[in-house]
Amino acid sequence: MKTQHEILMEDREFRRLLTIEALVTEASEMIARLMAEQDVSKADLARKLNKSRAWVTQLLSGKANMTVRTLGEVVYALGAEVKLNAQPPGWKHERRRHRAEPGRNRTGV
Image 1 (cartoon, rainbow, N blue to C red):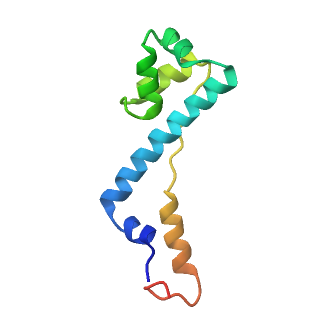
Image 2: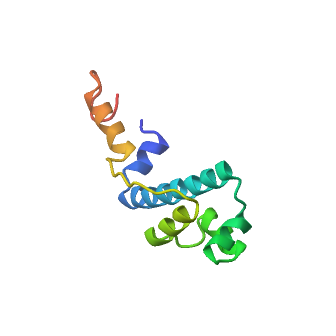
Image 3: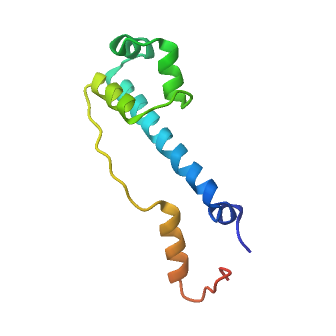
């Protein structure tokens, strides 16, 4: 019997949306971490970017569209840089691992 997670991960559209949201979350968390490490408030960052504090809040919450250019501007304002790295998603590794497990048939039993 498949878990709810396995059922969801079979849905191509769900995986697409999950990939997008995971990247947005990772970028937002990276910015928040940089801000915390440097003791930079939302208002401080907004001033550095010539934006409003509300815009920074929306960016960190994922409500504002974070383009690659925006991410670069924000990270630069925080004195850092971003290095992108693409790799196969975790669900593909999970699927391969299940296939390789001895004694498992196609239904996962």
